[in-house]
Length: 77
Figure 1 (tube, rainbow, N blue to C red):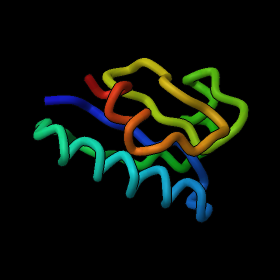
Figure 2 (spheres, helix red, strand yellow):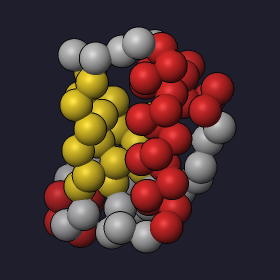
Figure 3 (spheres, helix red, strand yellow):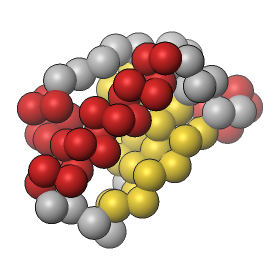
């Protein structure tokens, strides 16, 4: 099971990244756990300065942008 974390304070881009990531994971048939990390101190522990950010199994995959579903699929593989 993949651990997917969305880092952000709950802005519209953060919510959009969560929705796109969930769509990508479901289309790949991946078992996953999605967690939203909203506390600034917790976000900073990942070394992320700009949000939204995507973390998969502890690795930051993207920060400060909204990748496409196809790009997200590649990040989740």
